[in-house]
Length: 335
Ligand code: SAM
Image (cartoon, rainbow, N blue to C red; front, side):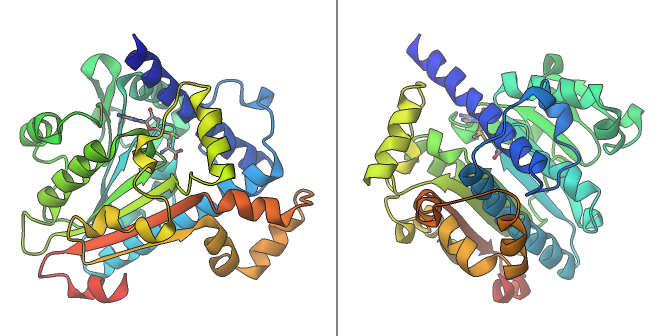
């Protein structure tokens, strides 16, 4: 059936993201000691073109920086924070945080994806001594859901279809496991290249449900959200991107309502967030990457066409927002 084919094609985008990251790591744009266990035959995987490596670098640095700011601010509030990663795929962020200076600021890290992806990831984690060791004592790490879920004191991996009505999927799940995510702790929702694959109705239902759960439940609830996605798909280059994906049976219904960078913050402002903002990767590269870093990455590979790079980066953006309960004015001022 067509829908199933579409879902299989969407799941394959996880390999694209992981291979792009691997390429940027092998070419020394990024450091990621945890990526190898998630990739089959990593030494045989081809490098991606310099344009893609730079895009991966800018996206990764910008998202790491936002997550790091979130951990720092939550820590300043005196509360450990929770992170929920939607469509986490083969992402290694949990292990990078767990081995970094802010590991103590994190109380829960929950990853969600299709069960095919979470099963594969749970298996990769179990096979890797290095990844498993960072989850805690072996007796505290358990598999569930026939191998599609993994639980440990801080890290949880859960299978789901994010398009299901959240009141039916997450409602019963969180009611049955009240220690999984506490509504009274500062929580960051991460949507890294996932909302574009869902209809706007599904993604806003998802954001709305989690907003109600975290920001609505208590006085001091604090919710942050970060989205990375393709946008600006109506120009000639955007159409090429859309057609390339369509040829692989991947459609991008989530990008439709966001033709411009100015339209992106409405993902959050429409949910009554106190603050929402968006920047393109082009803007981030120009204004937020340190000159010394730009110089360093310029030495890594030949790139002839800066215009072409900027054209590509103009089609990706990061949007972030924050919604506060009444007890969190410190965060309001800083984010
Ligand atoms: N966030 C990771 C990253 O940036 O490296 C992976 C991004 S990958 C492009 C998109 C991921 O979202 C895939 O792992 C895919 O399976 C997941 N995904 C897309 N639609 C989903 C849905 N309806 N339910 C669960 N997962 C979904």
